[in-house]
Image 1 (cartoon, rainbow, N blue to C red):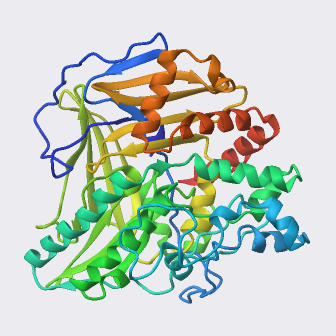
Image 2 (spheres, rainbow, N blue to C red):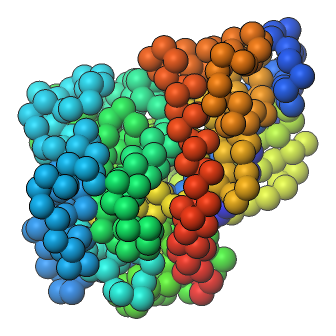
Image 3 (tube, rainbow, N blue to C red):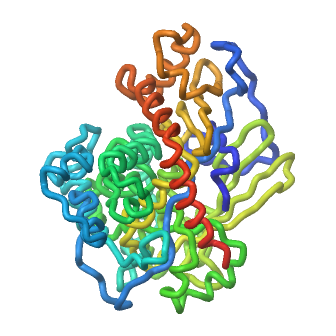
Length: 497
């Protein structure tokens, strides 16, 4: 499902973050705001920007199926394990030069300050060590192989639908607060990767890519970090719902699937399938049992879904069904989550685009819910590093996009798009090179950039600095060409399905 190549509506839903599907879409009026010759689009309350990307992984994999590798994922050892595999000897003093220490040390207090509202039951870093591992990386494969827990994920038991509804309300409060607190960010992890690569000095990005252990650095998070941080915050609900946090798990989502039946039939031979699938997206899952009925609660902050979604195996209440994720300019995006009729270890995530009440396009992704996904960092976050579409986005509590930047990594490309709110939504095409000398920028451009900086909740002048660094990185022809080569190699994994 090439969602990154499709427009994503900025304004989507009502106070519940999703609305009953209307009979027709409406177009809202526009209002005046900042104008400039560089503004290429001026939308109303609802605006398009490309979606955030596709990060996740699907098939379980292990040297001993059914046995959990208890070796933790040490986020605090950026690159050390992989460097050992390359037989590279580096003294501790030189390691300071090669790797960015700001995001690699394990500490009771996170080195990056952010709004960690519910950390009394443990930290995000402890959760990483508890739930994530590094796994086997075949020499001829562009990514490590994904790994799942060896046992089936257990369901959290609730007495009735009323108790479950209370749980949904509580989780949704945390979900919406997280959307507001934290940006979706696939830019900072790329820059951290690039800085480490340049300090390494070898030049061969393929070797360095294999040596590098991606750090998770709040507040700069992709879908991986957002799902883990939501889980971390939800520890606070253990007081009301005993031991609830022990039942959450990271679930993976595979998107580019043309043949669902072939994909689902491979569930009995997961090791073989792991070699032929691109690993794309992760979210937070909670299996539930209401009385004797089975279901799952899904939270997806990486795709800006500002509500919890329920899929019941029997399809009855409180099953969510189809809902409107976004609606603008007579174009509606609708989502549906349901158990696969071919294999109940998977949830089908159906999306359709509707214009004038006519379905223009429909696609289906698959979310694996049988076992917890253990390599979200080693596989999914790593895959994110070299994907050729990047974005930094702020959201409100309902998942509506407020401001941000996005661009494609391409050879000889100096262009990015910036969007922001000024009464209505605006998008502006800009060049990274324009920020090499900020003193020469015109007043209107500076005002636009400062507005976006503020709406991204960044420190003063942080966005211009970020754009300068990105521009310098994109001028590194050797780095860019190697990133695109690795990305293409990973993309070729999907050809079978």
